[in-house]
Structures are given as structure tokens and as C-alpha cells.
Amino acid sequence: MTTRTRTGIVFALAAAFISGISIYVNKVAVTAVGDPLLFTTLKNTVVGGILLAYLISFRGRIRPVKSSPLTWLGLLGLAVIGGALLVRIGLGAAMTLRPEAGAAV
Image (tube, rainbow, N blue to C red; front, top):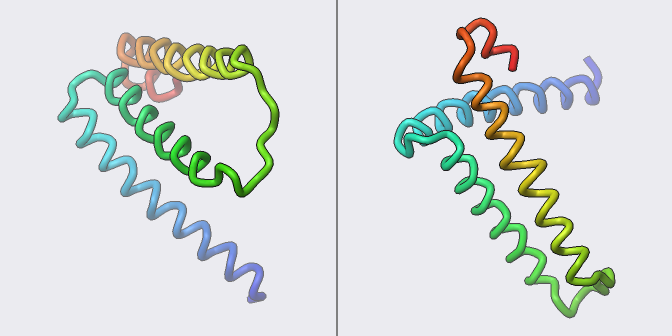
């Protein structure tokens, strides 16, 4: 077995392990919060805050891309429509279907 193949297998196993832990943690968290949409919104808000803090930490060290407030407003709109709205539609559809059909959504 080559080193490249071995590395690929290790990454695949690590991804499977992390995915398994993530599914369990998400199930427990959604059960604790109650509303899947609220949980997803809170989770994405925390991730967005972490990414924003990361970007702010580089302020002054890298040359930023010039953008207008309208650009940022457009990105926010994209996040809301492409993130929260689609999650709501998907969760709504999955919760009204039988389990076999909901798994496909």
C-alpha cells in the first residue's frame, strides 16, 4: 500500500469518525433546543461570529478587498435566503413526510 493510499484511508476514517460524533451531538442539541430551525440559526450565527472574529484578527496585516456596504448587504441576503430559508423549507418538507421519504430530502 502506498503512502498516498494510506493517507487517503486515514482521512476517510477520520471524516467518518467526526461525522458520527457530529450526528450524535447535533441530535442531542436539537432535542435540547426543541426547534430544528432555531438550532440551525444559532449554530450558523456562532460559526459566522467565529469567522468574523478570524477575519478581524487579520485587520492591518493583509490588504482587504474593497467592497461597498451594498456588497455586504447582498452577502447577508444571500446567507439568509440560501441558508436559513432553504433549511426551513427542507426541514418543513422532511418533517411532513414519512421517514422513508424524509430521509431522501
